[in-house]
Image (cartoon, rainbow, N blue to C red):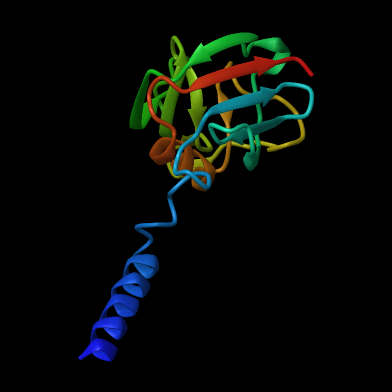
Length: 153
């Protein structure tokens, strides 16, 4: 009986892991402490509450310095959103931290993805673009109130 119970626990744990129910947990303690966005390096760095780096994400910020520098907090999210500058362009997994500015996946005009050189140079209208996979991770794992620091270096 004891062996059967142990096997059952192992099978349940394996099923949960395969379904991805544990894969979205951020950090060792299950939380995100802050996100630093480096304009110079075109990277977002996600830290747990103790300050340990848990994820480095290549990004493309606002061209011509359009991503405002400063300290903000995540305050809302939308699974799909439309560009304020072109209603034919949509993005997935928008997580806002400064007015209409936030993290989101690669913009699309219809089914065509817009060119976005992640980790290379800024091309957006102010938001922080990232892969759809990384934008989904932020969307799921970063709660409202999480600090976001947009820094020049």
